[in-house]
Length: 315
Image 1 (cartoon, rainbow, N blue to C red):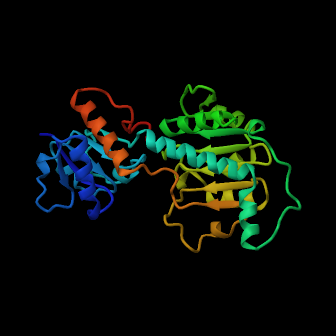
Image 2 (cartoon, one colour):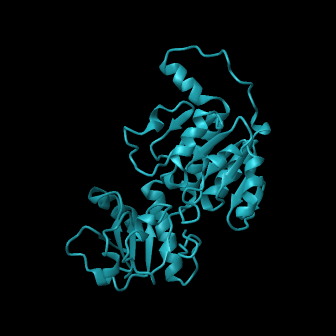
């Protein structure tokens, strides 16, 4: 019998996970990561969020590590994680649909001045004067930095909503209805054609701190920026500078280097900025359990899975 150890959502979540897997894959032996009697050699798969350092290395028969989220840095930050065991990133249609919905909301919020109206409402002001001309979706080009599973879904959603859409990735991609750019040398041309940019890049040594003042200053004005990738991708001081001197007209941030965002952060009071608490995409446990079952079934049959972490690429 195939054995899965689960550490996601805390100790209280295990009962729900066990019930879901009992319905979706009755012959799967589901064990609680926190159980002191857990037989480590019996574990074949581990579904984890922030696993205890050194624990995965103690599972000699581990076939794959399944991340409970799209990122894997919460696993690879453990210097002892077993390098011979594949890590599979969380995927599934629900997570992609949630991300697409959130980004579409964020893009329309910047397009129609939501940060301005939010401040005006808070101050009880009827702020019609000085309102910039309305720009239509069809007149707006949105760029997606990162065309992976989530980025492709976001790009196609925005295209269906009537936006002009461009995409940029470090390696060549093809996405229907999207003008694709690839490579560091293509980044300036990509930025200069966009009114807004959505950052959905993974965190790697090459992408960390990639969004600088220079990057933001290349966008068409009035310009907007949305980060739903990783907080570490953005140089915060540069983002604040761009908003303060109006190089950047508005921004929406959902991810931050430190979460929760500290109360002392200057981001809270920055005009033109909407902050959300890392809620862009968080698939239900049912959807994630379904994805895990599909993944284990494929791996047990010797089939390849799409979202396997590549240490050389960093995602």
